[in-house]
Structure formats: C-alpha cells, structure tokens
Length: 167
Image (cartoon, rainbow, N blue to C red; front, side, top):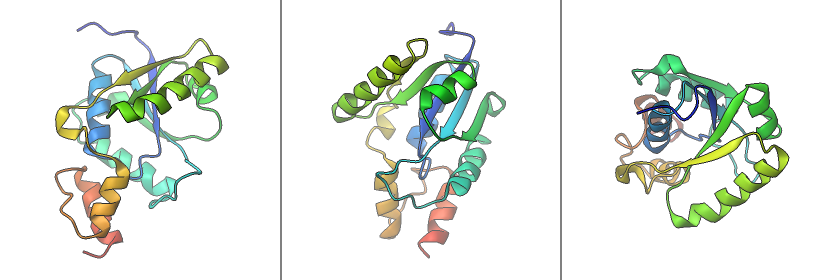
C-alpha cells in the first residue's frame, strides 16, 4: 500500500484513557503515514479521570506494544490544533469515526480547522468492527463499576484503571 504523503500526521484527542479503538486507529494511520504524533489535549467540556501527565505516560506505554512504535510520538498540546499541526510540519489530522453520530461533530471540527488553515487536511478513519462501540467514557464507566475491561484497553491502562477504582 502506498502512503498518502511521506509526512507527519497528528492524531489528537483527550485519550482519557487510550483504548484499543484508539490503538486500532494508530495502526491504520501507520499504514498511510511515516510519523504519527498522538497529541493529548484538554476538552473543557469533560472532567478528566487522568491528568495530562498520566495520559502521556499511559499512551507512551501503550504505544510500546506496537511493532512500529518508533514511528509514533506522543505529546501534550494546548491551543489551536492547526497551530500545533503547523508547528510539527504535519500534512494532516487523523480523526476516528465510530458511528454516524460522530460524523456531524467531526465534520464541523474539520471544516473549522480547514477555515483556520487550508493547508492541513482532516482524514477520517474507522476502527475495526471489533472496536466500533468503544469510547473512553464507556471504559471509565465500566471500570468504575468493576466491569471486565482488560481486553478493551492496553495492559497498562487496565492496570491503572483497576488501581484508580480499587478493584
């Protein structure tokens, strides 16, 4: 498979916590791009379970499980995503879509990002059917109630969720 561009792509999100669905999107993006920067940001509308520093650690540890982990960087960012993308010389932004309900919101973000910088495209990737239902919110809720989440998140995340919720 040929690469879309031999450049850097940004995969932004809160990753609170990173799930196997996120990891699936990263694996798919690695087939298309040379370098992926997982950009951990804040969403003021959400109350984070893990601090930015904890999320940075969890994502870095999870990425180590990938055979091509040397092509994935993980950073915390703040401010406009397009400014961060320009600073990193990225050619695109990757966004994951799970359902039609995600599309409207993601399209609005993509169009706003295009308005702010028409040199950076947004590419939507759909995770494997196995992970299509996953979200960080669902994982946190299940973990909080003692649900079995081991096969839905990277090993380090399952461990930290169990510690956080004392089970």
